[in-house]
Image 1 (cartoon, helix red, strand yellow):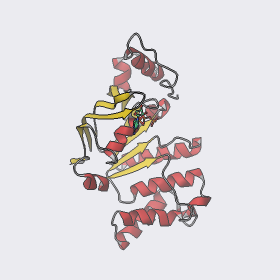
Image 2 (spheres, helix red, strand yellow):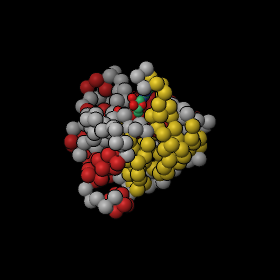
Image 3 (tube, helix red, strand yellow):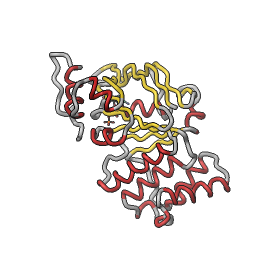
Image 4 (tube, helix red, strand yellow):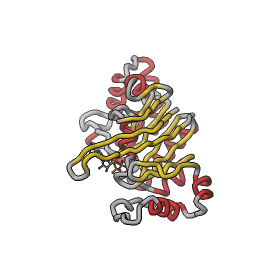
Length: 260
Ligand SMILES: Nc1ncnc2c1ncn2[C@@H]1O[C@H](COP(=O)(O)OP(=O)(O)OP(=O)(O)O)[C@@H](O)[C@H]1O
């Protein structure tokens, strides 16, 4: 289970000075649920997910994974999460099998349990035909499966997908979404960030719409469409963003870069 309460992260840069990239964000994700974080580039999704995966420390607020605080118990948290993004490094000279094995070893898995787990994962993700293919010779689909297997090797209860379909062809992206659904059936707690509306519509049990570091609204698709009296999700998304802009500020094209 993921619990996030009033999470805030401030950054400082030359252009903006000190600003809140994540601003008082709160949500809960339960086992057997896919929670979607939808927002344009720069909305703050990656920052939230990096805090959950213990890579960044929050400025304030609390986030826990299965009751363990991400800021104060990072080792316990890392044991319980798997992280999949679109830019996971795949080593050119290691085979698919060796890479997943290596990550299992990093998690302290011992021989028997590691090899049983590897066999199971390679069957489940249909990776046996490229077990011995080195990273340098893998297709995008193969590389993505290795990234998923790496994230799953220690069988974590929580999985975090950060723009994981970015750059994938339609078929590979479709397969990834099918794997995510299977993980939900297995009772995993899943968080999935994207800027693609159709993905959250098709996949997620609950959705949070993020903009400029804040969650503008969250709920099931039915709750959101009911609350905003708008059945077209794209219309709902843009009207929600527009209503949160003050009169002097119009949303520029970059902020609108959310795909159907
Ligand atoms: N290390 C940093 N220092 C300063 N600003 C940062 C830093 N990392 C991110 N930002 C800024 O914080 C805001 C949120 O970025 P973040 O990457 O979390 O958004 P995002 O929704 O994941 O978008 P993207 O899909 O582009 O990664 C952006 O305005 C970004 O420019």
